[in-house]
Amino acid sequence: MTVSAKHPASTVALVWILRVVIGAVFIISGFAKADDLYGFIFKVEEYLQVWGWSQPRSLVIIGTMGLSGIEFVLGCMLLLGCYKRTSVWLMLAMMAFMLPLTAYIYIADPVPDCGCFGDFIVLSNGATFLKNIFITAALVYLAVCNKKVPGLFGPYIQWLVITVCSLYIIIIGVYGYVLQPLVDFRSFAVGTSLVADDAEEEDAEFEFIYEKEGIRKTFSQDNLPDSSWTFVDRRQLNAQPTSKTEFAILDNNENITEEVIATEGEQLLILIPDYDRADVSNTYVLNLLADYVRSQGGSIVSLIAADKNRIEEWKDLSMADYPVYYAEPTLLKELARGIMPAVYLRDGTIVWKRTTTSIDPDILEKAAGTPGVLDTLALDGYSTLRNLTATLVIILAVLFLLDRSGRLLKWSIMLRKKAEKLK
Image (cartoon, rainbow, N blue to C red):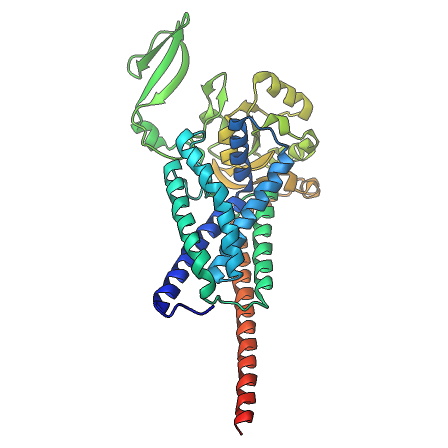
């Protein structure tokens, strides 16, 4: 089909603008979900819990990995002009499900945000619904006009383009699930200090909640009650609004973060955000980590989202000879991803974090007395992402040049044949 003779330039321009905009939205959405696959899993399970549906975690993992990959690849197809008709109709099929879903979420408000872009971009339910209306309208236009405008690649090489893009997003998803997200958009990225800022503490104004004989009252910091009252909690009065999660470790409902997080030296935090999924067989690695950290003069602490009975049960099962405290499950999931992730601190600042299942016990067994071994376990997600993306771009550029050279060769042969006929 040829470009419309009435408005060819405007049609071509609008098609390419919509390809870039809608394609980029799908690419970013798919990448954000695949990068932080655990975050996407948690969001899907949140939906399932609201609706009263119970599904095995394995099915949720397959579904989230598949959906994030499909979103990313469809975005690449549209952006590059590959499979022009198929890509648009598949996107419309997806929006036929997503548009009513986001309308329901906007009206019923079962969850705070839809999780469309993970923690990279957090949109309100209303903004998400409006976004999907725009995407659907744009795709309806492209369903009519996308075929009219050529893409960057010819029909005989498009399958290679899709294969390369699929491998790229699969690698990112597997990396994020097995190790940690390549890019951390959450509150506790590497380099974040878990130690409270003394200057902020000095300027902070608090009110204190105490209880006596079942009655709770609030007191100012200049008018605290006598010892017959029991401390319950404190609230900061002049806290600035923030989207960051507050880091807090609790013991008997008392915030003991300042006592637990070491301001100097090495410290390892072992997180268990979901006690029912904790793997006792992994405690061998945990105990090796504990022995090594203490041999270097550091400390180890475990943070578990469980009640006192389960914390004691875990101590017995894991033979933990290090402190174990309670922390909110949302906090632990925000701090690091995985079933039982480890977070390595130096002077209270996060140096690295990764799943304990990805740590080779042989390294720890051979590391006795050798300083600096834990530093070798650090992950450089940004460098890995940069290398993966550069490889993808180079391969796509080579395929583009091969495709163009093939077309040029075909055109030159056709021109030569025409020239011979004219002779």
